[in-house]
Image 1 (cartoon, helix red, strand yellow):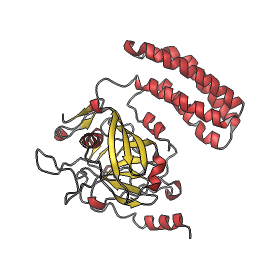
Image 2 (image 1 turned 180 degrees about the horizontal axis):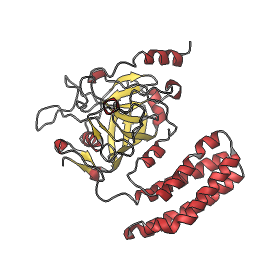
Image 3 (image 1 turned 180 degrees about the vertical axis):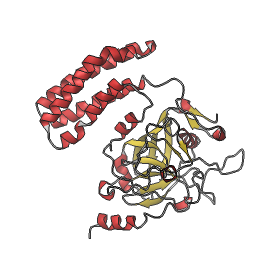
Image 4 (image 1 turned 120 degrees about the horizontal axis):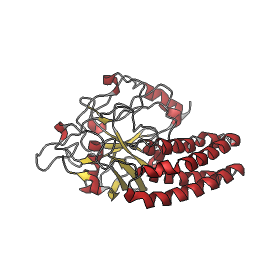
Length: 358
């Protein structure tokens, strides 16, 4: 019996178990998700409705499976369609962009047009490496354009009962330095403002610096954030109490974020959240099996392993809040264990989007 098969059998034994206490809280297997690229997940999670750009984005993203299968006729067709969509919708896209961002948008569009032209040429030449490289550039430019459509005001309501909690009203980028190397992550405050806010607030205080990995499950989760001493969470210096963050999950197509309700509570047994646990390095917030609103400071890196994600098994999406994704350096997660530690978490961008409370 292979090691992965043994782990799969072992993990399926936990299907009826929710969580264990916070100091050793774990997550469970998600079902498979066809989008496993963190940048793609983050693009799709932006609160925008620009259909023209979205269609170009999805057409490009959908070539991933085609490239893996060397299906060049279909790749050629997708590349040509992306170019056609951009050429026919450039004026429409520009009309919807605020005046202050027009020159920036025009520059990005010019670069995107050039890259899509090059993409078509590489598709015709069946040059896989160059195609992938240019597609990555093109999708970054699509994402840059989409960011110009973001609303100036925060688009979602946060219940008044959480007014005393910090919130991240946008996105932040962090450098996570560990004893095995550096990672970079995007923290998504649009879809998990309180969870992301708690994380960025604690990171800005240096709370995580020097903390060990207090749980390491191979092919599963790597957890940290348990402070030194008897406490298992962050003690607010003003209240002298452990600060708690509610379970917070956005559901596609819903106007309101779900707070302190699992997907089972909502009767959503097959739904995928806006921020799914679908890729190596998904950041998740830990809570106990006794309550949904007692997550305080501990978080985990999800160690996505495709072979251990059987269809129909989804015991983490809808039970834990994802709040960001490692976008660079995720490979070191497979080398980290309980003998390692977080050296520091530095906020590179987005600290200005953090509010200490409402």
